[in-house]
Image (cartoon, rainbow, N blue to C red; front, side):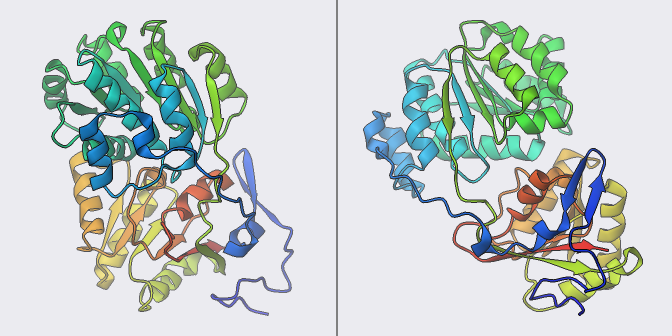
Length: 390
C-alpha cells in the first residue's frame, strides 16, 4: 500500500512503530499524521472580565477596541490584574494564546501612570522581539509610550542612539542586550520590570549565561514576568532564582495545530527536491512555508526553486536583519508565495494566510514540530502540514 498524500498512512512493509533519532531526542513518526479531530479538545474556560473591568487608561482602552479586541483571552483575563497589582508572574502558555497582549497592556498602563518606568523584555529570536515591539506599538497610538528594539543583525549605532533617548520599553534578544550593557549603554540597575518571554526556547538556544548575567545586574525590587511553554528542571532552577513569590498561571489551550491537517510524505532523500517541486506546483499550495534543518539546505533549496521559476526566498539566521525583514515583508505581501526557512521562522513569524507548511527536514523534537506547523491554520482557517520521511 503506497502513501496517498491526502489520506495519511504507511507502506505495509515498514514498521509503524519505528522511531527516528535526532541527537538526544526522538520522535515517533506516527505523530506526524494525527488529524485535527484526534487532538484532545480543551473546553474554553469562561473569562471573568471584559477589558473595561481592568481599570485601564481610557485612551488605551480605546486603542484596544480599535484593534478589534472584544473579550480577553484566558491568559489575558488572569494575567492582567496580577501584573497591575505588581505581582511576579510565572505564565505557562504557548504562542497563540494572546500572551503578548497579556503583559503589554498592563505594562503600558504602568508607563502611563509613571513615565519614569523602565521595562526590559527579552525574547529568544529577532523575529519574536520584532513582533512584541509591533504589538506594543499597536496599542500605544496617540500615547506617550516609547519602545525600541535591541537585536543583532541591525545597526548597533542606531540602537545605541535610540536607547540613549530613554525609551520606556526595550525589547531585544539576550546577546545584543548583554552587549549593550557591557558598552554601558544600558544600565540594568535602572530596570523596574523584567519580562522573559519563551524562556524554554532561550535556554535551548544557549542563552542561559547571558540571561543570568543580565538578571544579576537588575534590582531585587523589580517586577519579573516569566513566560514559558514548558517547565523542565532547567526552567525550574531559574524560577527559584528570578521570581519572588510568583503567581502561577497555566493556560491549557487547545493544541496550536488543532486546525491543521497533518500527513507524511514517504520519499527518499535524493527524490525530495523533485517531490517538493511537484507539490508546490499544485494550485491549492497558495502560500507555503518550507522548513529545512540548516542554512545551507535552505539556501540551496530556495535557489533551486527560484531557478525553476517559483517565487521563493530563503530565510535564516545567517542573513542580515534588514534582509530578513524584507524577505518576511515580501512573504506577507504575497510578492513571494514560498518561504524556505530554518527554525528561526518557527517562532515569531505571524502571518495569517499560510496555506501549507512542509517539513523538508524533520524537526529536532516534537515541540519544534508543533511550533512549525502552528504557522498555518491560524485563527479559524484550515491549514495543512506535510512532513517528508524516508
